[in-house]
Image 1 (cartoon, rainbow, N blue to C red):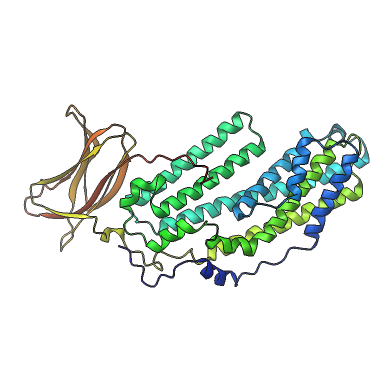
Image 2 (cartoon, one colour):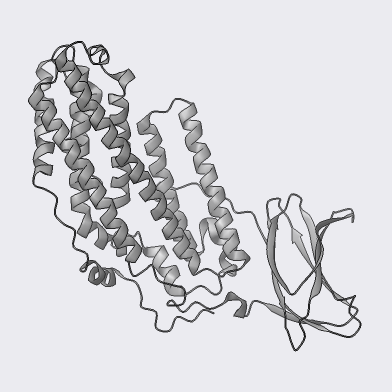
Amino acid sequence: MAMTEGLVPITRTYLARYYDKYPLPPLPDATTDLAARLRALSADLAAVAPIAPDEELLEQEAAGIPAHKIDENLWKNREQMEEILFLINTSHRPVALQQKSTPEDAEIVCTLDDIEAKLKDMLKNLEQFQLKNADNVFNTVMTYMPQDFRGTLIRQQRERSERNKQAEVDALVSAGGSIHDRYALLWKQQMERRVQLAQLGSATGVYKTLVRYLVGVPQVLLDFIRQINDDNGPMEEQRERYGPALYTLTKLVLAIRLYLHVSLARYGQRKIEKDDAAVLQQAVVIYTKEFLKFTEFIGEVFVNAPFFISAEDAGAVDARKSDEYKETIIPAGKTHEVILSVEAVNSYIAWDFSLQQGALNMDIGFHVEYISPSGEKTLILPYRRYEADQGNFCTVSSGSYKLVWDNSYSSFFKKVLRYKVDAVPPVVEPALSATEL
């Protein structure tokens, strides 16, 4: 078992003391004022043409209370940036702006071009921030996992899960899904990742087949990743400290989108006045500048947070010291065999072994073969001699798999083999229940 002596439990109180060292600089007062000004300008345009149902929904969202979770707000901001970029794309602009019919139209085009450039840069930065943060969280958790085939299986499960998620998004886009539909799916997938992280912490759900393979993981880490996103868990401290600034930025980008949507839809009846365009441009400048500062700040806080600690600090030890490893003596001229039964395809055959070394370095032959129900043998892993090895493969057939350690070539030396082998059933992602969603 992993040693956890000296490992400080990671709690909300512990994080609060850490966050005291990282006060978030306040947003400019103009942030809130500009959002209110843009909503007022949007309301005034209702006199030009009645507010459409989709505009009414957008107005309600802009005037409402943003989501409580930090990452949900980040996804919401990303969605709004894409929606705005779609609105102001040259091909979607009013005809007068596409043709630059008047000098005033040309000025508005310059404003929209500037907004487009700023939001494209910010969107790219946000996408990179989210990818980096997701990788940091997963890689940090994996630092504590046994560095054998169990960690490999968990990585493979994550890679497979991410491929499936991307395929789901691609299918939605191909079917004509809207930007809003795509981000609704992306947020659902993010919630699935949270569920899987909690399942990894408790070795349930998608990871229940690995529950008996998690020996060697500090319990304090499993407790943490199971509880990290609880409503009153460690991340609630982060939400209370840094959430309000992000909520304000969310309301600002919603106000920007609302004004652009309403004003461009009525551009044929009323052009955007120069002063109004200046308010819009100032709002975008402050939004992109402050949002970039926020992501850079929060990224630094995340990377240096106390739950990002080394495996050495956590007291993790080599999983090979676990009692679940067997030991056997293979006499000179003999072999040792283990047969694993596989009931379902896409199961994993996994092994981890080493030889006890003395004055001389020893090796041993190793190969894996498949035995069909009729008794026919097929070589899966060719014979090779090793001092130690760790590996796994995904099965394509049910039946029996024989792992053979061969010391028949030795005339004098016995070999002391320490090994662990397993047939791990397929990992199937469960559907989210209404409660989990």
